[in-house]
Amino acid sequence: MLGFTEGAATALQLIVSWDPVLLAIVARSLWVSACACAIACALGLGLGAWLAVARFAGQPLLLLLLNTCLAVPSVVVGLVVYLLLSRSGPLGFLGWLFSFKAMVLAQAVLVLPVVAALTRQVVEDAQALHGEQLQSLGAGTHLRALLLAWDERYALLTVGLAAFGRAISEVGAVMVVGGNIDGFTRVMTTAIALETSKGDLPLALALGLLLLLVVLLLNAAIALLRHWRLQEEWAAPRTAPGARA
Amino acid sequence: MTASVQPVVALENVSVQLGRGPKAVQALRGVQLSIAAGERVALIGANGSGKSTLLRLVHGLLAPTGGQLRGNPDLAQAMVFQRPYLMRTSVRNNVALALWLRGIPWRQAQQQALLALARVGLEALAQRPARKLSGGQQQRVALARAWALAPQVLVLDEPTASLDPHAKREVEALIHDLAHADAAMTLVFASHNLGQVKRLATRVLYLEQGQVLADLPVNDFFAGPLLQAQYPQAHWFVKGE
Image (cartoon, rainbow over all chains, first blue to last red):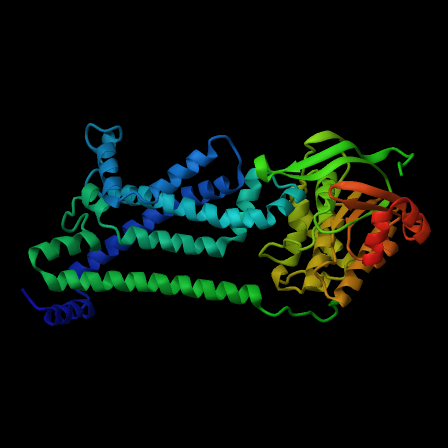
């Protein structure tokens, strides 16, 4: 087994030489997580915004369930999706098990509560501050949820990025429903687990470094967004010629 | 005072309780009030006296928990808050949004928004991001937004409280102009600024602990002896202010 320094050097060589196997795994990982996040955001943003504004019986229970889903281990999500997609499961007729689609579905289920819960928090804060004024203008519950979510779009972009970070770094769900099939359903995290168990540390390390790089880029994007937002919010007011102060 | 003309809003022994259980607050109790069209009613009182609750009740944002509130649901109403909420979009879109929410098509709403902004002297800033305006300008956008809705009842919750003296004068002058341009428009506002109350109101209500303790025409309210004799609490409040 190679030492850490040698492994790291080989890993770097794999990265700088654009190793096709490595690139295919990275591209697949990014694509799976991007699709899963798009689905989770499409459903979760609306659900979270609505939960922030609407008031109905049973809402506390629903919120409790939603928050509990945040802590569900990814392998349990994988197991549930596996049971749904297995031949005898209710969605078995789709024939998605051990496919790209199964991995997207599993990750979407995994990050949906993250998107919904974080969106609810963001929109609920906005609702507490501004909901009454929108209501005074004539916006009902649904429109209020939509308008507040739109107004908090930069904060919600951060929610999307956080969800992507959660999706791309999980291993349990995609391993169970994807099967880690070489060239087909192998993604960064499952490949790292496999190559480590096989003793092929350079490839595992190279994937690990790339995964770190992706997470680093995500965090940089979040920080930039936050900085940009703060600048937008606190920029000194300017007065146009002819306008009174 | 009870107006003899048909009221735009009438409260009969109205009470409002905010929250439930041991943390519940009785924000208004036994309020008897009738406001006629064209009146300019000022609400004064210490913080927590129930002014904002009464304004929200008149505007329909709150429902009474006791008593009866009678108003004409067909009357166009608008409310301006102490710190106006302007969305992260242009000044013009903010005004247009209010019109669109009342069912006016977006294109038409945008045209009307320009007229409303011209009314408050902000047409030059129509394309600017609303959140980049100064506090006074933002409050004028809020007034333009309210005016665009052609309200028959305009409710203002301390509209100049968070502004610097110059912006205060600007916004107050604008409110004065809007109220005087349409004699039929009813103005109901809360303020801690007694000078402003004298300049804008025709009638003053003094609230304390959720109750209306004094209800007088503005001249009577500020004519010391009457207030001192009949409404000592209100007199001491005015003296203190």
